Length: 299
Image (cartoon, rainbow, N blue to C red; front, side, top):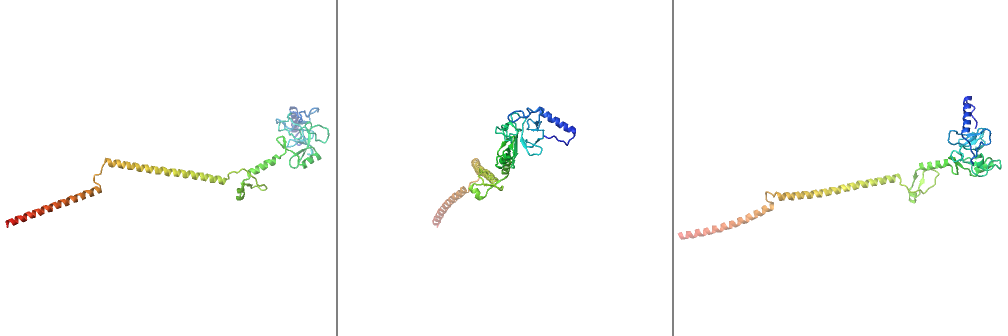
């Protein structure tokens, strides 16, 4: 790693001291667990982030750390996967790129396996990496055999593209037409996508209609119950009033006869009057006869 030279001497001295302290306090290891600085009189590899639990290492003899955890030379023409402070290489801070038991891909043949060395890597245009430099790395990139880095591990899929497509699909609302709805096909509103067959999900409008139907059913049911209770109440009230009226009539008979009773009494009185009138006429006839006889006798 190249130390900054545009700072005051005191600051540069502190930076050198910090780097030396980091080298002493944390060692750097190959993927096979061997100390990278073993055999060097002066340690040349140091942690890029000495304050972290684990960190990738770069050489301070001209290497520069990259944001992706790899190291490059001063002009950026050569990129390396170097050592890590975790001897087991289980930490996600250890970039496990070109770090297995495969044959070394450096230009110098016979160097052993990838895990025994610092490996040169080639960045591809799509953001992936290939092991090796020169034509070996370029051919790998052109054939699409590069791998992507995520949390210190390698994967074939591009994590950035996967996250972007997931976010796009979640933000796109499915649009259905009568024809596609009848066929059960839902198309996305995002341009460039093809029809898919997702599981049927209730649309917001359908949910609103269902909610309205449920609310209407509840209100109608309550209204029906109210009418039924009102009818039962009126019937019971009428029966109770009839019972009260019957009891009152039995307890307190009417002071005057009814119309029918009165008519019957009049009819009976008229019949009695006629009979009395006939008797009077008969008696008057008898009296006249007697008087006539008396007059004859006198004459």
